[in-house]
Amino acid sequence: MIPVKGFAGFDRKQDCVLVIRDSDIVTAALREALAGAPPEERPGLERALATVAATADATEERLRARWVRSRLADAGFTGDITSVAALRALRRAEPRLSLLAAVLLQRQAVAHPE
Image (cartoon, rainbow, N blue to C red):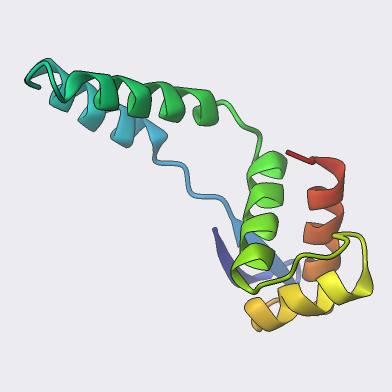
């Protein structure tokens, strides 16, 4: 996930959080590794492949929600995700986010609990 500034029109900027999906590349690499793997490595590679397959179908909103929770966890925040304190922690963890973008991301995290 990458917070960036985008342009919504001629007169105002809009924050965007890009979701980069490369699960197809990871899946191909894991399948290739699995094809030539010795028996002792196969269970780990099969589990990794199953994990990638399970997350590949996640919506962008769910991925953003997961990203918000991971950023809050990395910042050491353990409180209520709906709180103003969570919003502050998110903005401290990602200073490039505008208040509006942080609020929208917080709402997605609330709407898509894990």
